[in-house]
Figure (tube, helix red, strand yellow):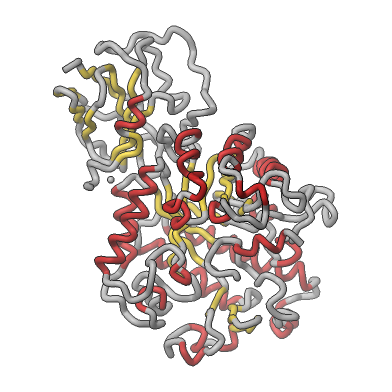
Length: 517
């Protein structure tokens, strides 16, 4: 069953406290640092060579699905206090794992988990479509993420109009009831017709409203565009095709409809707030070699041909800031081998300004239908393979419930083997870095400094005994990322502090020595 999971259609292929206190790293990260003398760093003995085990910048994210109450809130009808507590638990666990981004579903099916002037309240808050939950969750969701140094991406489903085949159960003001001519029924669900200009205008309006009014860092679409095949014999958009097709082939017209929406959303997001990112997590197979010699050596469903999602076109046109293909299959899986697909996607973004993150199916770990998923080392092996490709800038896990559940202790292994150190988020090219922190001083084990204008957080490094700071090379000496202006050192030594703006552009380091107690 497909619910809100990005690509629960994987089977288709077979055929922490206050703002100042929250930090990545901390005592655990610092414990492994070598002993140092409490003196200023000396000139580097030799040039630092980046250690691939400790990437300086890497997106480490988790999807938080709200549809069907998959991740949050855990059930409908919970009090705001209970909803908040559940969300904070998810975030604190992400920080514990040295993750640095959350992708939170705010629009599962033309509804809203925020106070929207365009669409009704989501039923996944109260149990009743359109019922006011008594609070607007989105300011809390963004603020709590930022308090912990987590980037917040608002996740929208663009075309799903309603899960309920009985439209009479929806609020009278729901767009699906106000505009029945926008709808196509497919199986037991309703979709907005991607071929209608007014549908695209509505989606752009909804996304723009959120970017304008809320402190989001990104806008995120999942893999659902035209519906996955199989629920019904055909998607009946014949009338729209006759009106707007202009002589094109049906498949080409459908892909152009999606491409047009993607371009419109990208422009609207950046016109509203230039620094907000827009990205998509497409189905993991663009096309197979059997369909296109430039496709992947796979034999699964083609997103290009089946759901009319042309990720290659988005990359080439630069209408996305990142792609996050959902590679929910293990290594060696004949129809869709993880290694084959990761390499293929790395080649697709090579030489472009589009970043590549990999969607990882943590929910599959422990599943017995594919033997490889019963091996605790399978997911860590994916990240080890990714190191071969500098184009791969990180990973996002589906989903939050599974990150908490830690199936086969896979998250423990990921934390130990890949996330032992915190990492900065990938930063855009160009732009001005924030000023270097001033007033840095040590009083006992406490490091304090003055706030830097425009900084959202600060990176703290501990210089090794050699005096060779690799602060600009990798994260081997990065002990914490904090959102306040203080840090309690766990060991004596020389420390460097840099300021990070909301896009994680980094300042030059300030330096101070912490003396032995």
